[in-house]
Length: 341
Image 1 (cartoon, rainbow, N blue to C red):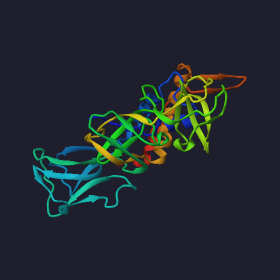
Image 2 (cartoon, rainbow, N blue to C red; image 1 turned 90 degrees about the vertical axis):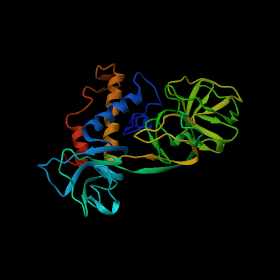
Image 3 (cartoon, one colour; image 1 turned 30 degrees about the vertical axis):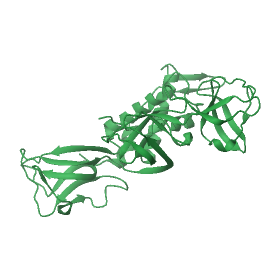
Image 4 (cartoon, rainbow, N blue to C red; image 1 turned 135 degrees about the vertical axis):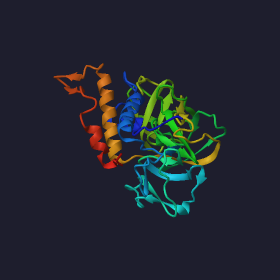
C-alpha cells in the first residue's frame, strides 16, 4: 500500500520562504515528506487510510466498549466471521473526538464483545485523525487506472504534496509546476505579443484570458510565474524555478504547466478510470499544517547552508538553522489530537 500523508505542500513552502519556485540545493518535497513522517510516527494519520484491522479482547479486559484507534467510519464489522449490522453497534463518542475527527470506541447493542484471544473482531473501514476535503473547482479525466499524470485547466490550483480525491480514489501529487521531474507544459494558443527584454516584469500575450494568476509558464527554457493579469498583460516573476531571466522574441511559444505527476490509488484506495470527475483535496488541521510548514522550512534552510546551520553574513544579516526539530514542538502540536492508547 502506498501511503501519502504529507501535511503541507510545495506551494506552502515556496510561498513562506519566498523561494522563487523549486530552486536551491535541497529538494522541497523531501523536506516536506520528512517533516510529515515525523508527525505521522508520533501522532498517526491525518489523511484517511482505508484498510482492515483485526482486534482480540483479552479475557481479563472485559468491557462494554471495544476501544479502537482513530476510527473514522466502518465499511464492515465482523465477529468471528459473522457480519454485525449497523443497527447493532454505535460509535463512541457519538459526536467524534473533535470536528472531522475520529471515534475511539464501538459499543454493541444486543451483542456482547467476545473475550477470547481466539475470536477475531475484524473492522474494515476508514482510519485516521481527520477527514476533511475541499473542492478545487476542477474536473479531470484519466482514461485508465495506470495513468501517472493528471491534466487540469488551471495549474495554480494544484501543487506537489497534495493528496487529491477523485471519486473513491486518492491520488498523491508528486511533481508539477516545473518541479524536478515534472511533466512538460501544455502549449498555449496565445503567444508572446511583442519582444521581451531581460528584466521585464510584464509580458504581453495574445489573450490573457487563457492564463490564470498563480500559474507557471515556460517561454523558451525560462520558467515565469504569473502574479497578476490585466487584460492581455501578465505581471510576472522572471527566472522562476532557478531558470535564467533572458530575452525572448515576438511570437515566442508559451507553455503552461497544467500536467502533474501523480501516484495512483494511495492510502488503501484503488486506482480506477475517471471521466470528467470533480477533484477535491484533503486538508489537515490548521495547527498541524502550520507546524509542518515550520519544520519543513527549517529542514530546507538547514540544507541550504550545507548543514552548517548558518547563512548570510554580518553586513546583510544572518540566520541560524542548527536545530531542525525543536524539542517538544511536534508533541506540542499533537496535544489537541491525542486519542489515547
